[in-house]
Length: 255
Image (cartoon, rainbow, N blue to C red):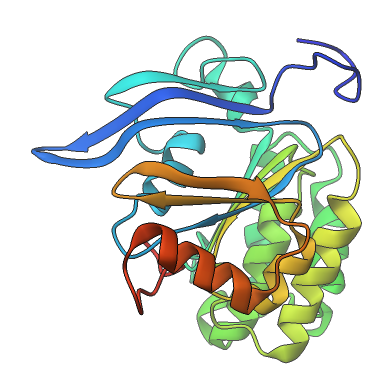
């Protein structure tokens, strides 16, 4: 892999070729070709059942492809040093992946140690402070509101400074302040060519200003792939619906 991702010819942070995922007789992804170049911030859209969540789970190493090729930072996530590859990935979804019986701080300390952070305790406190949970750091997660749990999940997903961040409906459960916090953190951390994010969301208002590119799926295939420049939320929704010929579809909902 090219040591400097800003240089021409740098290996894509994520590359899929003919990617297929089947669940029994059902085809969730059907020959997806997609590259994420260094520095890109991509919205992944499509109607219910389009394959968005499946693609994110495959990229995170949670679903094994049935056919085709998938590489993360130039490596097969299912071969070689899988832990090292997955350690460069962050995942934020409507599921928090937090342990209810542990405090917010204990959850982040656990994940920090899992990622090999030498200052896990300090990193956990700093991360919780950044998402506005410093005063609830020692409360069990089960005692936090849904919005607070999602804030803690944001801290967890960004704790280890991932090079590839995968977001599946990340604004779910957040109030206005929480949405602004997530917007700010993504804008601050993903403004250079060292990191990439891929976000599936129906909530275009906070997401679209962050994006450099829009990709849409329909029945497991890429139907739109274009720059985000020049699009507003209404125009993008119209474009996706028209292209997929599914008027009124909830094109960003989890699938």
